[in-house]
Amino acid sequence: MAILVTGAAGFIGYHVAQALLARGERVVGVDNLNPYYDVRLKQARLARLEGQAGFAFHHADIADREAMAALVARHGGFDGIVHLAAQAGVRYSMQDPWSYVSANVAGHLAMLEMARNMPQCQHLVYASSSSVYGANREVPFREEDRVDTPLSLYAATKRADELMSHAYSHLYGIRQTGLRFFTVYGPWGRPDMAYFSFARAILQGEPVTLYDGGRLRRDFTYVDDIVAGVVGALDRPPEDGRAPRILNIGNSRSEAVSELVALLEAALGRQAVRVEAPRPLADVEETFASVDSIHRLTGFVPSTPLSVGIPRFAAWYLEWVGREK
Image (cartoon, rainbow, N blue to C red):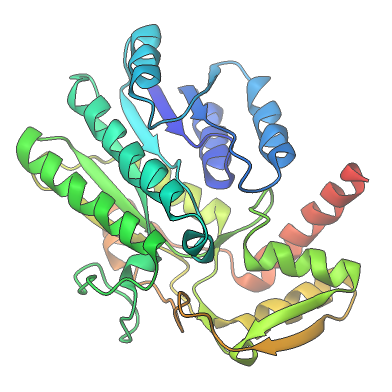
């Protein structure tokens, strides 16, 4: 099979591409390598993919319709699309809202149009986010919960993606699965995320800012578990293209940010300099996934607790920092 992976130089995209290549798929990756965070990290991920048989890469913006049409023409279409490219970051959406509309809304539309015009495309799997649950307070979050109270523009764009996908399935019978990711972490991760920035601050003796005293809770999900869920969903498209589905994909466990910091301290062998601050308006108090639906579909069972995943990340991070120096 030929699979298009958007955001292939990104954190989750890189790991998904690796998994697909490992089982013998032909993978075409696309990424615009934007400078939202250190491009050297994206280039390093990409370098690990480019040396493998079956992988081809295109440096392009998914919202560029002409570039995407040329991509399809060059490769003769794709059997499946794993659409992970996006402008990430909840708080950054307050600084540069236009980039979210371009990447997350226009970019998603470009993938829907691509799938609509490729009869051989069996399944479009795309990244949504736990952020769509917004101000919901009842946990664990379930796919049938209302999601009409987003707390950030980022969340609003991800919900817009889900609604556009619903419309395209209704109109054109495109088989789709939207995955609501819950706080993914692990080796080769994103520097803008808390666990990564905390590790950097701890090693450099800089303050670690804990909102609400570290009492905010997140469903921290190790990247290998995420990849297993993504690939499992890709392999099982909906039988009816006019009934798109939404699935949570998380660790199904809510843990305090203060516990994350304690595990990083132990793994890195240093104490954090802790500073408290009020919770930002765009941040939710807690995320917690019900994964019953994805379990029934794929057998998905997250197997990596935070106490195992953080030491793995820390070992990779120390190696990465040493390499950069």
